[in-house]
Length: 201
Image 1 (cartoon, rainbow, N blue to C red):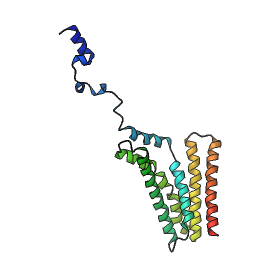
Image 2: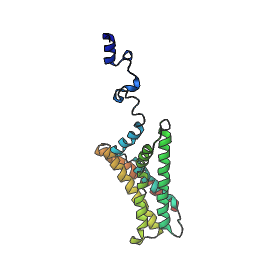
Image 3: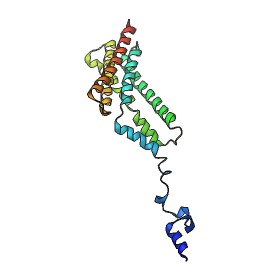
Image 4: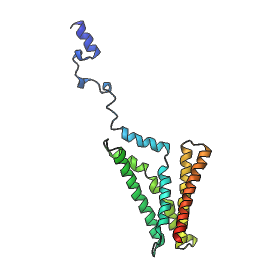
């Protein structure tokens, strides 16, 4: 064996005659390895940052549902609970679908990606639970149909302001910005209350 052939074999170059498939996998380019993993890692990062946008939106949605409920019929408590939870589930599914097919249509969808997006948007459903629970336990307070609606609305608005303030806090906002976020969401909640009062007259 000549010196040139020995050098080519040791260097692993094309002249060394080493087939590409025989090379160690660790020596392959890294660019092509994580392509399928990238969409799966992004949602986990968002969850670690504590994104409560869905909870704020879900609370606002729940308050809007309560305002738009109107006359609920012979079983107002049960109907309001079902309406709140079912609306939350429908909007959660719509958000998951829009995120998957709006941002990931160019990538290959996998079950881990779908599950991560479903968990990411889950606060939309969770935000509907407290007002639904409030409506369910309203008989303990001796409330009539209108009292049930107002209690559920109050709980939804408290959740909206609370989630918005927590979101600002987890994002590293200053105390002034946290108060501003809470005040803005309180203002939006009061607009919903005014809308309800206007609809009743």
